[in-house]
Image 1 (tube, one colour):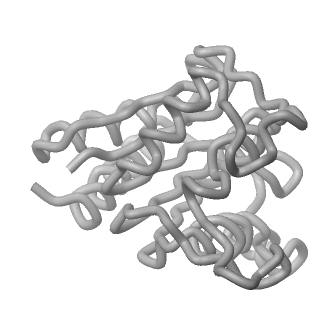
Image 2 (cartoon, helix red, strand yellow; image 1 turned 180 degrees about the vertical axis):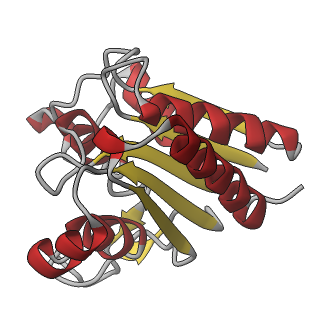
Image 3 (tube, rainbow, N blue to C red; image 1 turned 180 degrees about the horizontal axis):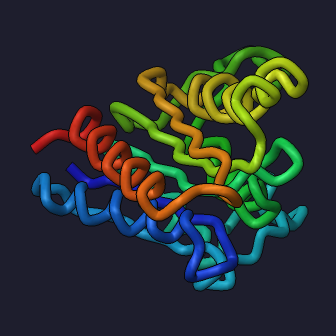
Length: 197
């Protein structure tokens, strides 16, 4: 199998980077190949231009590469912080430019775009690891856990990936090294469950 891993955090010393590193190592230890992208390190341009919107658009080489990889991936892992109840803008732009018609979904004949798309992604599972400085009870009660809705329902569910798992690590700002070690162990366990040897 080949697993696509997408990281979106600007600080190379962040816990998000530690999560991504642990995930990539666990995937490789299980004998799988990895498409890995650190969006900030690669200076990914998140701006979707009008010329790219059409399903038949000629895409810049870097976007075509991302599209080809996500279409070929047998599994997907996304790592990011929770900023204002959303992924960072660079990751939202990656979704806008890469999770596109003809790659991740398509509308059926007779549908002008107002219906429910048919998912095209062949990934057997998707995992989202995200960090937060909000307690889980407050995230659920006050904010309604928007990350779960975005990734499970609005993106992967519509693109054909129904085997979805999300793990949120919180509260990052007050976490200890011992807590972070336990969290990284949980990352490995999740990888082993969804992308076993």
